[in-house]
Structures are given as structure tokens and as C-alpha cells.
Amino acid sequence: MTKKDSFLIHRLKSINYACKGAILLIKTEASVQIQFAIAVIVTWAGIYFDISTTEWILQILAIGLVMSVEGLNTAIEKLADFIHPEDHKKIGVIKDVAAGAVFFAALAAILVGLIIYFPKIF
Image 1: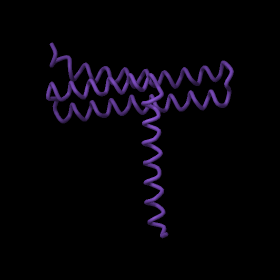
Image 2: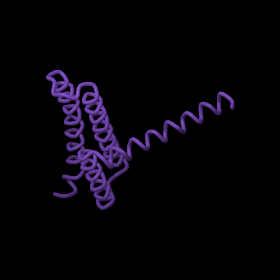
Image 3: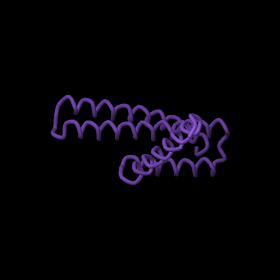
Image 4: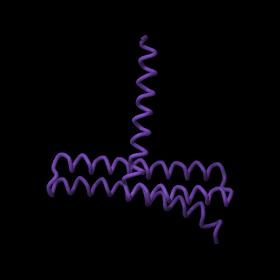
């Protein structure tokens, strides 16, 4: 096996792990399931309202941002629970800050959605 083959094999394995993680998030995390459902709904809305290429880009970025930050929040929560299973004030702060990041991402996505769809609906 050459270095080039090794690099390619490692990249393919990384993609496999990432897909497993994404599927695990969607299957097991209620918050990710909700975000995924919203992503499906706004994708359908984008098709229905025939949004522009720029609007598609913004919508896709907003969906990706929220889903990514939600995944990171879940990872932080699981890591924190693994390190310190009992309630702990500092762990609680860490979890709250991670949840706050999801809030900011979701708020930005809501604003993008309003900017795109409000004029089309009203």
C-alpha cells in the first residue's frame, strides 16, 4: 500500500464514520429529528415557491449550520455526561453554553427563513 492509497483509504473511512454519526444523530436525538423535519419542510417550501439560487444557498447554509451546531451540542452533552454523570454546576454551565450556540444558529436560520418566505407567503 502506498502513501497515496493510505491517504485515500483514511479519507474514505472518515466519510464512513461521519455518515454513521449523522445517521446516529437522526435516529437517536429528538432535537436533531425536529431540525431534520424542519429541513425537509423548508426544502419542500423552496421547491414549491421556486426560490432563487441565492435563496437556496442561504437556506442550505442555514440548515447545515443548525444541524452541525446541534450535533456538536449533542457531542458536548454526551462527553460532559461521560466525564461527570452526576449533576455538577460547571458541567451545567458547559451544557448551557453549548445549547446557547444552538439557539443562536436556530435564530439565524429562522431569520433567513423569514427573509426568504415572508414576501412569498404574504
